[in-house]
Amino acid sequence: MNLSIDKQVFNACRDFIWHKDSRVKTTHTPTEFRYEISNFDGLVMKCTLYICIPHYVGSGPQNQTGQVLLFDNNGLVFTATTKHNIARAMDKTASTPAVRFLSHRHEPYFFDLVNLANTRFMSGYNTKNLIYDRNPGYIFHELYQKQK
Image (cartoon, rainbow, N blue to C red):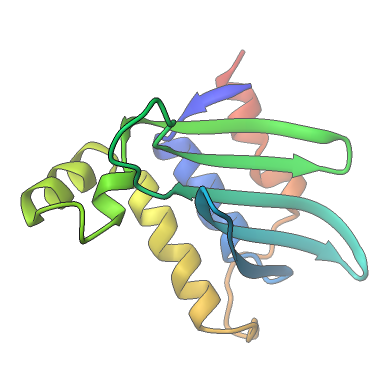
């Protein structure tokens, strides 16, 4: 299922990012920077949420929209994408403060998810103060309902 990044997607992803059993790591590829948030039940992975931030490329047909992807043990559950190009706003050398401001204004939920994932990543894996302890399988129930 393909969604836009709206309030429902943001709320579900926020809960997943700050879930007490989630672990965050970052990955750089030639085309993007990615946050990988995995949720474990003991040693078994339940779900993995990816927040993908493309690198800015000045010319060419590259897709420069942000993506949020959720995979479970059975495969892809959903994809949510930004409606606007966000790569330029993420590259301070390729944008002005006005471009960054407008991009954040057009895609506030995506940039908030990036900030949450970065905050969780920078805070390490100390989960004793996390408030979200719902089962991740239920966290995304509201997204399934949205498609009906």
